[in-house]
Amino acid sequence: MPRRPHYHVYVVQLDDPVWNVAKFRKANPDYELGKPFVYVGMTGLDPDVRFDKHKAGIQANRFVQQWGLHLLPKLYERFNPMPYEAAREMEVELGIALRKAGYGVWQG
Image (tube, rainbow, N blue to C red; front, side, top):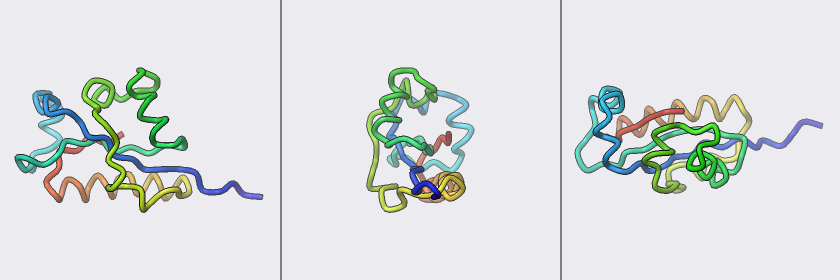
């Protein structure tokens, strides 16, 4: 019997000082002043558990570990859960959509 879809995309709000990182600024040339800075990722875990692991330095993205504030479930809850391939695609699509909306985005 195939496993239930259990992958999730998630979005973490990043603190404003992340904008001081040249690599982050370079990845976001169309950032609109005042919009949030976010990290978009995907996981087979519950997004809350994954966020806690980032903050604890376990398989952490440095932007989330250093500047992650909290999850933004309104931006991703409606998509979850989903199969692995769909989550991989949605992670990219969501990042592109948020960039188009003027957000500063880093992807996992």
